[in-house]
Length: 198
Image 1 (spheres, rainbow, N blue to C red):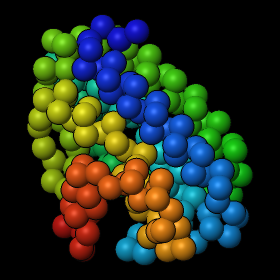
Image 2: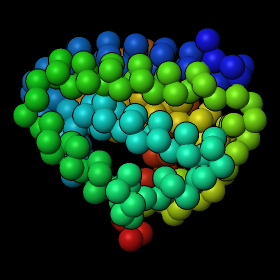
Image 3: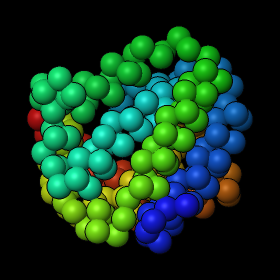
């Protein structure tokens, strides 16, 4: 059980979203998983790999922010500048030939470890500054960790919306459309539209 009620709500949210995400993934055929996603260099399955592999970096960022050292998230553990886009592309490429179940198993392990990290955070911790590194379409920013966590908790539906761009025949699924019909999801999609900024 988390030490903070806010963090506990975030944990409950990511658990519920991950359950929905896994159910959605299990409905996808190999052909659907291999479809290119419009306005992206990734295929549908790559978004599953992304969600499976980013959690350890997120945990590192959360710990750095909670410890009062948000700048540590801007560098790798070796001290080199951290490039979020390069990191994500490399993890996705490494898993391109993996079967879905192997990716989901990795996701489950990484998510469990991330939840353990979150459970240690206090209200004082989440009041600390979180440094978002930025990516090709969004500028770096500093904001309270609490604010970041509340938005990040929707990471699974955010990327489900991306995957659905390649799956127009599923657009009429009322459960899926209700799930991604969220202001944070829509805000992310708007922020990521258009050409890269850098």
